[in-house]
Image (cartoon, rainbow, N blue to C red; front, side, top):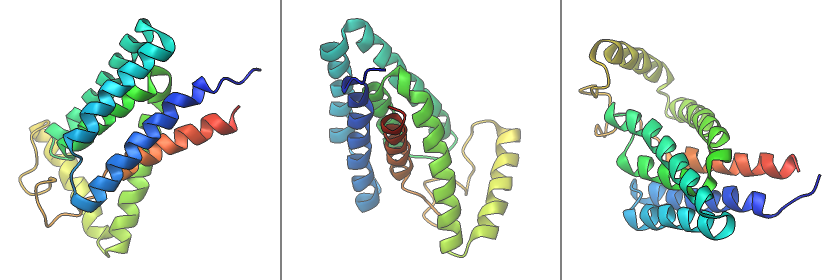
Amino acid sequence: MTFSPLELTYPAAASVCAVVGSITDVKSRRIPNFITFPAFALGLLMHLVLSGWKSSLVALAAGLICGLVFLVFYIAGGMGAGDVKLITAVGCIAGMSHIYSIMVLTALSGGVMAICLALFRGRFKQTFLNVIALASHHAHQGLQAHPDLNVSNDKTLRLPYALAIASGCILTLSIQIVSR
């Protein structure tokens, strides 16, 4: 099997984007547009230049798929708009062939990080009960945000989710490197 460095270019660039986003998310609890919008455009441009216009269109679709999945959680009050824009940019950069592993590994990383945060803050039991309350709320109210258990409430535990996105990207890149 021949190895092409181009195969790692997309997940490596997505990892860089996600790491930059996570640094700002940890520092300011925001992921600014001056990071996400150029990254979105960079992803499309990278695919256009390196792989052609069809790849660029497929990368756009990948970004939209990632963004739409995260948009559901934003509407439900579970994450901020910056997270949605960051995963959209990451999806455009990584391309369709990488978004499945990025999304799965991001979700797993986010779950592990959330459990660790709850344990570290001594609020695991309350967090577990909140998850049950959220599940019940969304089962009855649909995607409407819970009045108290949402990212706007400073009293709830909030994870800078860009860390999970960065972790999902880095793990995806690592798997790509190891499997070559």
